[in-house]
Length: 127
Image (cartoon, rainbow, N blue to C red; front, side, top):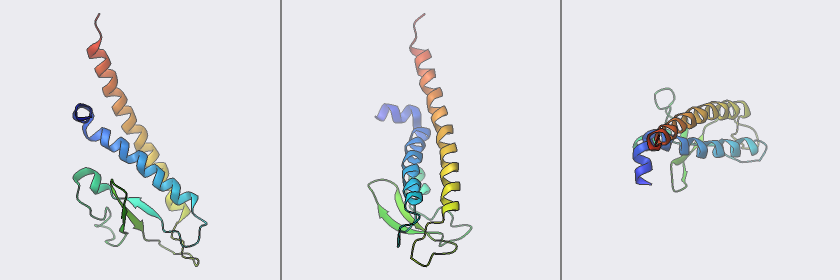
């Protein structure tokens, strides 16, 4: 795995992070009607530098609050703009936009990794 990490570097880690984030966002969307469900998201800065800080600290310091870590990037609870009466903090429109943006970035990371795999294949070809 170390060799793969050296070759794919940050883009390989980003691909794994985006796949994990997609699962978290899908869980938020699936639980949009579950009373007392708290919307979560992954701490992006933990993926890049290992330091856990709120990702939107410059625009709104309390945007994401600490959650539970699941052996990887830190999960944080999303603070809603308008909380529901049943305690659910999922805002469906926000989650759908986040999911679509993450899917687009996932496809980009995947194309970069595929390009690097193709470059390795070409380097190993003997004509």
